[in-house]
Amino acid sequence: MISRSQRDPASPQIPADVARASVSVLVIQMGARRAYELARMLEDRGALAALHTSTAWREGETPSRLYSQFFGMTDSIVKRRTVLGIPAHKVRTIFLSEPVGKLCERLGTGHQTRFRVEDWVLGRSARRAGLAGASVVLNTTGNGGTAFLRWARGQGARIATDIVITPSVYDILAEERRRWPGWEPAPGFATDAVRYRRHIEEVVAVSDLLLSPSETVDDGLATVTGFDAGKLARVPYGLGSAILQAGAPVPKRVLFAGQAGLRKGLPYLAEAARLLTPLGYDIRVAGTTPAGIRERPDCAALTFLGHLGPDEMAQGFRTADVFCLPSLAEGMASVTLEALASGLPCVVTRSAGAPVRDGVDGAIVPERNGPAIAAAIRAICEDRPTRARMSEAALWTASAHRLEVVGDRLHAVLAGLVGAHGSADLSHPCLPPKSFR
Image (cartoon, rainbow, N blue to C red; front, side):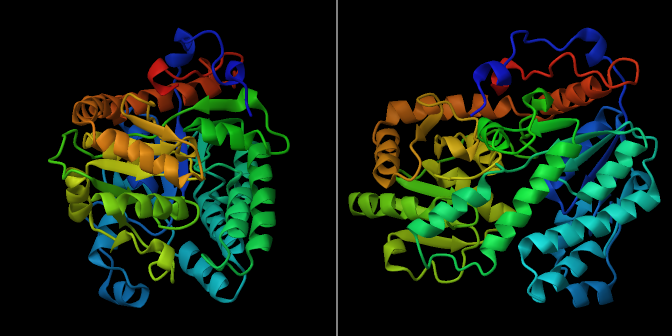
């Protein structure tokens, strides 16, 4: 585990010359993660050189009917993959990477091989397009591939990597698979685990700066061979487009949101539900669910809602009494920010990476402990003054993650990477504001 002195060096201030440094950033990422939030925040600060991504459309573009039919592009997918707030000439897309990756997976190569193929195709495209004058390449956990990142470094760019999930994820999943055999069949899991560990070691080695959203990612990075804590900077996730407004909670309604499986701690939520349902609680699960889990007898106390659209999800937040995410492996679960923005007290594990303060805007419970989850939910729902106080605090916590706040933080750490005069200078640590510790 990384010590607190490594995470939080003594001085809480970024030097003024570093904060004022100009920086030009090429963002490269697969998919529409966080609605292209990193690129948009940099564009708002005049620091975006270009966004290079997989299947996406510029504002005002639409896919052809033939393309949509062949690749199953629904209106909702196109909307999610439309890049807003960034000039069209800065958006570079390649439509080949994901189809090629999916083909590889169908041929039985496994998840990690698919991801590496997708990265390679994306990286080749980005290399042909060039760096657009960028002094920093910001990637998402190696998107673009380490070959591209090494090439960019050879061109004089510094490499910043946004680590989106704890590098210990496969170790954690291996333990859960031993505890809950048959829950999530995963052919090729062991091979995927080896390939992922190799990939993350290569990513850490090629990176000049590692952006971590939470302590759970810090701790996972500490297990990676070659990790240097001096490269680490805390940059939490932004609130995105969520509106800060408390809802009209239905007492004893508990909401979980995410892919309902082992990584998210579903067996322990199911255990808590078996204790709470006889007391009048309604434990709702929003999100896709691996085949066979809904039908399991030990999940009978859960109400599965399936995947919800944005409007339905917003309604779910507005009517819940408590949000619960007993996750075991995350980076920073964005869904907890949405819950906090709706004034929802959150019951989470430390591994959820959520900005929840125990006893203030929710409760942090031990991992893999259904009775502790149930007790925390009851303590909030059955003490209405406490619930009201936590709801108010939740809105304050969410407000600290507005994009203008997080964007300033992101810009500062990337400017610190190149220094005030265009050369790398990591002698001054990039530190999180107190609200991000």
